[in-house]
Image 1 (spheres, protein in one colour):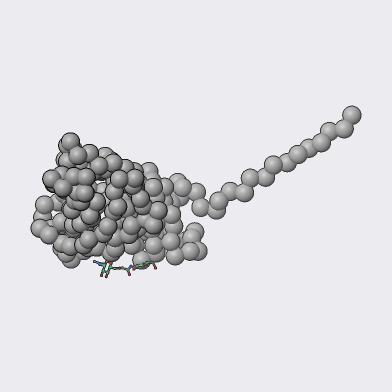
Image 2 (image 1 turned 90 degrees about the vertical axis):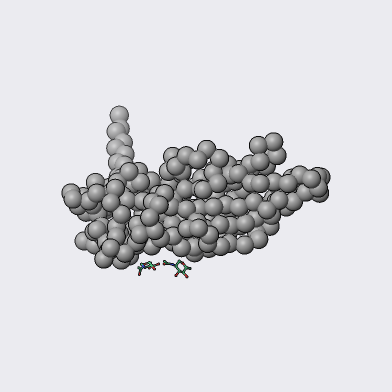
Length: 211
Ligand SMILES: *[C@@H]1O[C@H](CO)[C@@H](O)[C@H](O)[C@H]1NC(C)=O
Ligand SMILES: *[C@@H]1O[C@H](CO)[C@@H](O)[C@H](O)[C@H]1NC(C)=O
């Protein structure tokens, strides 16, 4: 009888998650406090990517879209785990959304009026060595649009996506647009979607689409 020994070797990723947690956040870190420096508002830069128009509901004047929301800001209280990491950035799992301060943005014309943190599904964070944090989330949101169906069936509607920060004081968070991107595959059987404009209005960032 012959015995065959099969050895399975697992290569461990040199940096364990536990290590990173201990390294990045100090005991004093309070994720409810915004990372203001010199009392300046936290600059949060946002890119929205429109992935899909799910539906347009004429009866309740709403439309539903899938969006990618990319945000970045700087949190100088974090410590980059430089001792273990050779690269200039580390990717952090979505569970970090409970540990880090994250911007309290929401959709002003969202149907439920709920704080979108509930609807946001954070996919990942990237922490750069200069303490800039990049956060990627995906959200499906139902938005109110004042549609006009008098021209039906040749109706077209100007609908907006309004993003704002829950911190009513501009002194806490200041939003800035990086970009608005529409997926090339974007099409809907009944609607042609056209980008009209992006603007700042009343502390919100407003993207206007023509459906
Ligand atoms: C930090 O580094 C990233 C990646 O190199 C860069 O995109 C970002 O602009 C930097 N942030 C600052 C505040 O310099
Ligand atoms: C946000 O990104 C845009 C484009 O990359 C840039 O022009 C703008 O200065 C950035 N704003 C902030 C506050 O970093």
